[in-house]
Amino acid sequence: LEDLIRFFEKKDNVSLGKMLKEVENQTPLSLEILKLSSFRKGKAHIIGITGPPGSGKSTLVGKMCKKLAAKDLRIGVVCVDPTSPFTKGALLGDRIRMQELGKLPNVFIKSLATRGNLGGLASSTADIVQVLDAFEMDVILIETVGVGQIEFDVLGVADTVLLVSVPGLGDTLQTLKAGIMEIADIYVINQADRPGADESVKDLNLMVRESGKKDWTPPIHKTVATQDSGIDELVHEITAHKKYLERSGLWKEKRQTRNVARLYSMIESLLAQRVEDHINMEESLKAKVQDVMNGERDPYTTSQEIVDRLIAKHNSYQYGG
Ligand SMILES: Nc1nc2c(ncn2[C@@H]2O[C@H](COP(=O)(O)OP(=O)(O)O)[C@@H](O)[C@H]2O)c(=O)[nH]1
Ligand SMILES: [Mg+2]
Image 1 (tube, rainbow, N blue to C red):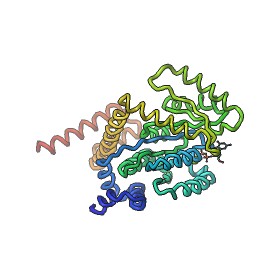
Image 2: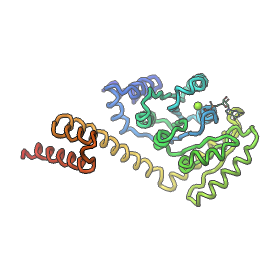
Image 3: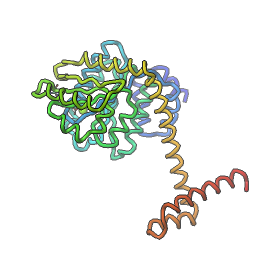
Image 4: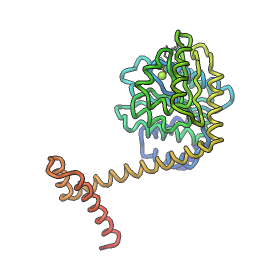
């Protein structure tokens, strides 16, 4: 434990890498790391970058990283790709590019593999981000590819969400991603060197207007990541969004909401585990579950009975009744 605290104090990339490994593999030490890091929350601006595969997210992240690193900021990058079995080739390219970036002394990169456990992906992202934050990163970039609920859960830890699209994808985005459109704070039309970029900007503009007036109107931004074009302006928009969050009180509010949401989700999973253990320990409850399984008992009444039974049992332990 003392080693751990020293690690936190040192704040070098080697100790950070070791800690993130522990957290990723959920070793016995990881709980201690997470406990310590939750007290040491820094001030990182957490930025989520999402969009279809191939839109240029990784290229963009790389270019933004370089800009930010040149400003002497400490940057953490987390790559979350739940589709990795299908995009091995792309991932390999990513990895090489990311290795280049990782050579910058103030940039730290972590790729999150899924190992088939999609459900845990969002919570391990949140854990990794927490540790990066505790290491006093100024900016944390999370790249995630859009896959249903996971994408939303992963983006739930972000302060600012960038939706990266390419020319001509406007309609597809609208139909496939209605939900994502709503959580985007900044729209990026990357590959603006390809035809149709201005039309896409116009389409998006219409969509943003249609979605009604808000305190923050998501800007729509053209970039050519491969040519480093539009990146300065994008970084500027991101900074503007951070200022908006601070001004409006949302910066603090989002953090508080996230803290409480994490607490509740931990309580839920602990309770679920306890309940399951209890049921397996008590034959009469196991029998009820069996009956529900066979359609011989209704789950509405049974769930109530089981919960009542567990609470009664708990009370009798506690008060010796
Ligand atoms: N023409 C053009 N190609 C780009 C641009 N940005 C990225 N690319 C290319 O698009 C491909 C996919 O980029 P990548 O960053 O891996 O996309 P990701 O899957 O969203 O992370 C790569 O071959 C990039 O070189 C751009 O602005 N213009
Ligand atoms: Mg990528």
